[in-house]
Length: 390
Image (cartoon, rainbow, N blue to C red; front, side):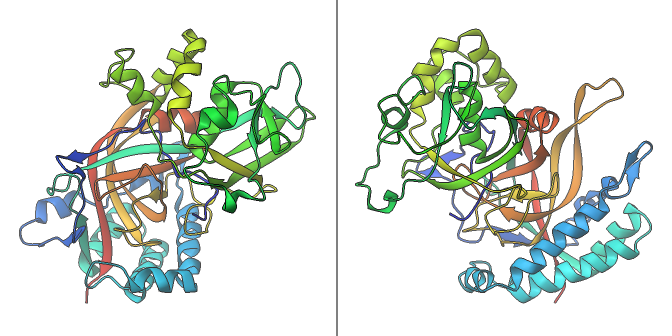
């Protein structure tokens, strides 16, 4: 998987199941009948964040840059190959590209969110995800790029390593070693076969684990420098939710389970990390990325609040999307308040925890506030792909 960020969300393992497993869909997207859905269309696509609010500048320039990243991807042989096997009739690489070009023109020329919304409704048709229930219900979560303290050398303060991909990794016997076998139950890796492959050391075990969950990080080094690390590979185990394991054992309630709740639990009961973190047997390797921005699975940088991760076997890579989701925003006092919004986004990432037509992960940016916001995103919404009318 070519990515330096995200392939695991802060969903803490929200998985949508039928009696036979994760919901799958032969046709994951269906065009909306405008006559039957006019009320829904009237409420879709009003994205005031592009223009901003009093005291809050708009992010339309960031959106333009994200569109350009997708257009760059769509010119690649990788994109051509992906769309050759794309399962939804009528959604082609050329149509996705033309839709992005036209949306970009409308974004530049529209003086307000209402006029952009009206133009999109005139010129585009909306393809809606069938969701996890066949009725369009999509569960949203958030992810982010953390900033943590680290050191290039181990000492009494910095003890928890991140590892480089071993040179002989492709010849490892399968099944691969588990997380516990690679780093030990305490995360220190004293007897690990990875000794000598350490990239950096972190001072907090949970932070090191969360770098595995996020797939990349910015690290403030003990010498004052800044280092960026990204995904280099992983073992062949699926992601297992530590949060769900705690729920299963009666330690936490599923209702209200968020990343801050999980972090608080392990801060209060740090010895329980030895029991629960190894239950996620999947293990990630890292590489130094020399200051490169967080990058999604299609090989382009991801943009805060404008890039999403979906199941790329079902959803069109690089395409313009429109989400209706509950997203937290800081209020006048700095507290986070969640509200339902419409946002235009680019489908630029994926994740091994993001499976089926009913899951979307929103990239929330870099740093602590992005992490706070990402950690409490969770709930039902809708996912659409606006494409030019044929």
